[in-house]
Image (cartoon, rainbow, N blue to C red; front, side, top):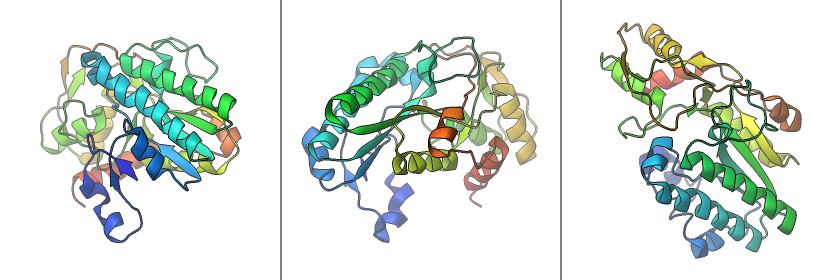
Length: 281
């Protein structure tokens, strides 16, 4: 495992390192020589590294490009040079933009609204080109709003669910961007893990949506979390963030047919596990 810990914490994998279930290298995907060293002898690479925030990309598009686009190109070059058989890459539902058609299908024309979304679309094109030119098998998984335990709620760029959980468990009203009517297809992290493993073990190549295939408004999300925790609060609304899409819902048919992906956790089941972790249970 390679990570520069810019958005993660070593404590999250400390037990795995101590038990020698994984080896850890602190470094960045922007370091091509290091990637070429680490990838030597690997059969496959799970490429999850990115600066994942839409807001951060609006504020600093150059940093997003360096980590997401240059970093992905380095991963592909190192994989090619080390004779890696397959790369499974984390893409994003943000590439679809704000097109009104729902659900989102992989054959729809992209319409990115942020530098982050542009970077992920560029990554997908690089993966396709490397598959065509160098016979490196690649899969790009378009994640839809991933959540789960260990998400950092303290960053200003934190995702909505860890923010909501932190506020609600502290009996503070959740803060909602915009009117809260915007919808998302929230995906529990264990569903994402399943998708990655199935994609790596299959012969599949190309782009695939990874989600639950269910549409939930931000207002409904806040209400669900309050119902599950038994804490009732009145949400506070603020201005909508630039670059955010209005509605998102995935068609996951292609992933199901290509490598048998089927979400094992619903939104509520994932929230229940995540709440228990945030409560320290």
